Length: 302
Image 1: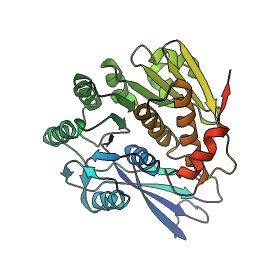
Image 2: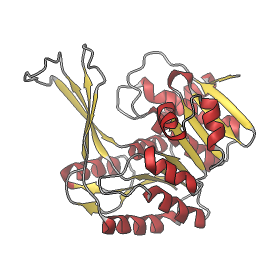
Image 3: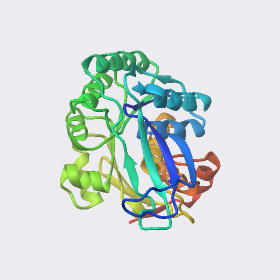
């Protein structure tokens, strides 16, 4: 089983609006809702690719219950404490104006030390059956900034490989305890590591992990391990949305580890998963048929 941590799940909403006028009332003409949060996207990708997966998160109020129900309807079990408040609602606007793809990310619930203790207890119970663990995204308000580091330490003690995908202080603290693999996008890497180029960023990260994955938008994936650095990309036709591409790529990394793929095969799998996410209108989701087709279309560049 692959265990996916999503401390800050969300209801991801597409909202279609014809135009924006400052200070005016606007009516949404169409809307869609999807279960979201980085770890949720990772888990959905893994499930779609026919691997066993479970989600550990904090769940708050009616929105938290809706997210859990959606995941469970897909056959993905969910675990973790229920906390006061509401899980986040994140809105992506669809418009013919300059506001197209503008996102509003809400803050969600607040957690305390006892909530984290409950989360950690669930983590320790689930970890025994995990072949690989992904830790993705932000934490709710009230987190101290070292929660991922504490959990990575527990996983390392049990020799459970962790793929860490986060930013800011959680990333910096997480690197100190040396997870198995790290994924960051180019923007996050520049902010945290003060490196300009994905190649040097990947080399920098190898001080702290065995596998370093840098995603750089249309430039694709830079995947480093030991003395090797692979640059892979897989252009697709129409791009519906890039939301969740990095998360689906992390799902590919987790599957590659579980299946024992080598570095080249790992880069191929991860790149195909990230690219497949762009091809459908559903937010943060991929389809197995798309991944299977793209695996043969991944290009490796020097």
